Image (cartoon, rainbow, N blue to C red; front, side):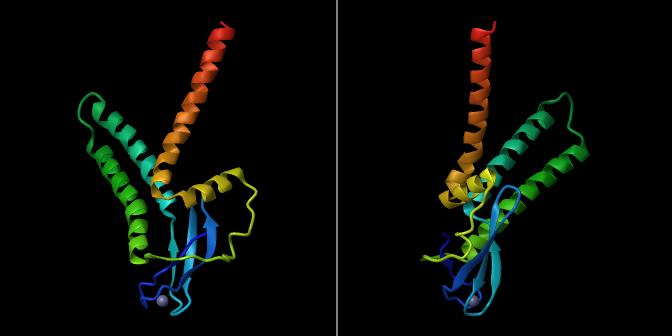
Length: 165
Ligand SMILES: [Zn+2]
C-alpha cells in the first residue's frame, strides 16, 4: 500500500493516500495532507512507465512510417508528430515531477481504506499489481505483453503448420 508522502505546502510528511480511482489503463491515487488539508493526485510510477514505453513504441513506428516513405514528410504530418511528442512528455514528465515535489516519506500506512475493496476485473487487478512494482516494471510490462502475444501467435502458427498442413 502507498506510503505517506511529504507535503510540499507545509513540509511535513502528513500526506496520506485517501482514495484510488482506476482509469482506462492506470490508477490515480489521491492524497490529502492531514496537517494543512492540501490535496493532490498522483499517478503511480509504474503507470507512468507503461505510458512512456507504449508512447515511445507508437512514436517510433509512426516516425518510421513518416520518415521512411517516399519523398518528404508534409508539414502538417510533421506538426502532428511533434504534437504527439509534446503530449507524451506532458503525460509522463508532469506526473513524474509531482513525485519529486511530494517525496515519499517511507512512512507506511498499515490501514489504507481503499486497499481492502476487491476488484472483480482481471485487468484492474493487473493494473493494481503493476502499480506496486515500480517504474522499471511498468516500462517492461508492455514489452512483455507484446512478446507474449507474438509468442502465442508464433505457437499457433507453428501448430497449424506442423499438424494441419
Ligand atoms: Zn500540508
